[in-house]
Image 1: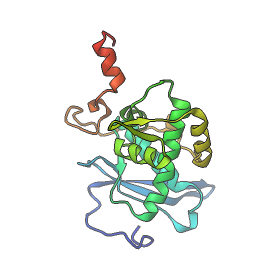
Image 2: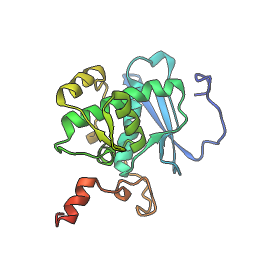
Image 3: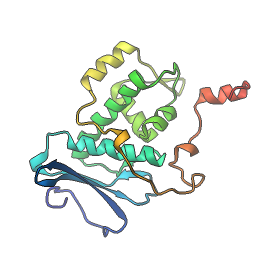
Image 4: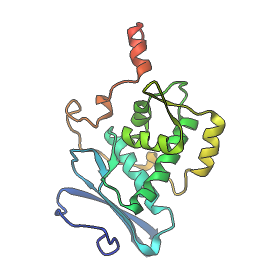
Length: 211
């Protein structure tokens, strides 16, 4: 990556990292077109450390594909994750549209609930809550009423925004992902979705004798 990224700095050896290499396949075999690295264990919940699409293969959607793949692995791990911060300008250009399209797609097509919390969205998408708050704020969907945040948007607004931030090809097919995560103690892992607090609605249902 240092060959192509001017801002890239080298502080660590490669031993603490896992590397996922994306290849194109033809009759002559496999040809690397990009990769991303990930810490084997991150104290701050990073699910991606460095990402690169080789210059000859840019503008094909491979960077977005690798970002989506990193979140699919987080789902397999049953964790929420976020890219290593601070992000570069190029990193922000890649992640902002991905977060926007993913959150909008979830609100439009993957959620049947009439009331959702940011933590509910985080659990289902594996995007860290602070990144969801940032995205909703950028989209103008986050309202503050008496110091409390609310997601406020009708379906027409969501559809209009979804046209601006569409889900692009190529997509990751989770059914084709055969990967076993390194399991840690859920109770001690603050990034596990099982350690996240339930939504306000769920707490109210429990208090009223619900599930």
